[in-house]
Image (tube, rainbow, N blue to C red):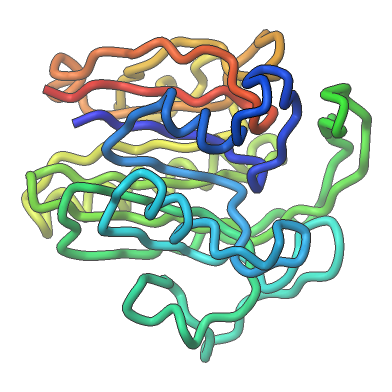
Length: 268
């Protein structure tokens, strides 16, 4: 099983020249050739991405039957958005997509059968921070950004593995609090479903910090940000030491989509 985690930047194309006229997303997905795709920064029926259900569209493109989308907010980040209310769907799948609202969050897309979809709330920081944001030309600019509610989405697979995807806060220390909270939830899932858990996503934590604050081991070491000239990695695939031995990191070249490079492992 090939597993990929990717901060998708809502499919924004930064360098179409990399594929010479071929559809950039199609080229990217063909390059990844993955079985389970964990995406962060995903749009769901938002105007800026053509009102597309990106989770379903990507699932269709890679021939994956199972997909789940966990909205973190209703609306568009950086523009107009609000928290979800209790009546809104917490996990959107093909079975309930007709009732969903325009939103933004994280996705898991799988060609491996999914027996359960689980969602976990991680809250948000009360403060924001100036962030380096990639423009359309690939250059970075500083912009003050307020934090958004953060969530985790788990797919319990029939093959004995569970993939938990998340996008943690960019606010220092608060993201460590979220990670510790998330690692406790992962242990609960392990016990309840007798499964092996892989924790993936953009943790907004550099220098391997997640391995120091949890007992999980890192399966990938590739630098991922910025995609055109990686200097650091905020992106991780983590699991218990007993499971890391079955994972082999797969190198991913620069892709035309997003300001992050994906990370990939092959699980035997």
